[in-house]
Amino acid sequence: MFISSSNDRYLELLEEIAKNTRSKANYILTVSGVGSDITTIYQQPIKLDPTRQYEVALTNLETYYSFPNIDSTNNKLNYRAKNSDDWKTVTIPVGCYEINAINASIIKQVGSDNIQTLANLNTQQCKLIIKSPFEVNFDIANSLRTTLGFNAKTYLHGIHQSENLVNILRVNSVLVHTDIISGSYLQGRIEPIIYSFFPDVLPGEKIMQVQQNLIYAPVTRDSIYRMVTWLTDQDNNKIDLRGETLTVRYHLRER
Image (cartoon, rainbow, N blue to C red; front, top):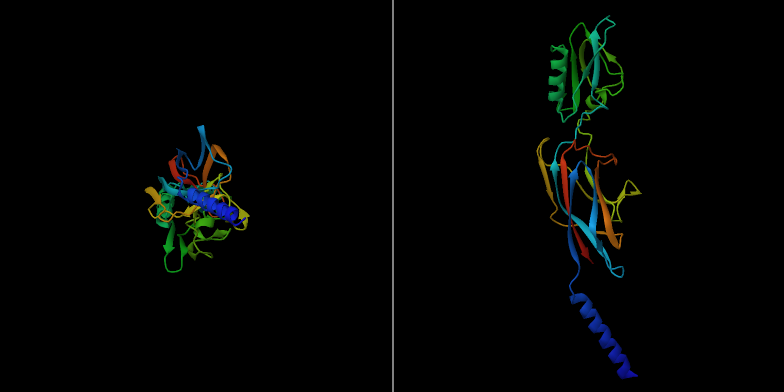
């Protein structure tokens, strides 16, 4: 009996050594496409051993800082000469703007500096300068007020400080999702988020995110026929890359 028990233990140790020293599966998955939502179909599906566990990490991401802070939801301002019924609309083209660039676009469309928006860097508010006889109406749909910090009302000529802080950067964090993982939450809800970042470059420049300390998430599939990668902001709204290419690389490995 003693010899049999010793042999069993010896075999268990050999199996454990074999398990720990055998080569483990590793895959580099690169996905690329136009826009922030990429679906990859694998012509040769990746077959994973259902008796083993696997995990995946994002290694690097490349795209351009092209997502706008001004779009069709927050790009309008109405103005008129006082006592006139002829309201005119300033529409800021979709793009990435600082307040000074918004100001330049308003001046260009109005045709004068009778309406100006200036940043107050100390208070993080916006100063609205309206010269007589003009007035500005922010009580309209898709108004610039949500970005500049003003209330939904009409402002007469004079100098006005925004009642609220400027919200020039609507995206606080870029979240990378992939549908082959689990174990991640966003605001208490299960979301397949594998990585988050904010660009350390200026709008229009190349984003090159390289993760130095890889964080792995458990893979939820035995076979990968199809894989979806998409980007959202911190509120889970899809990021608009405006037609730029997104490339993401993953490292998938056996635990």
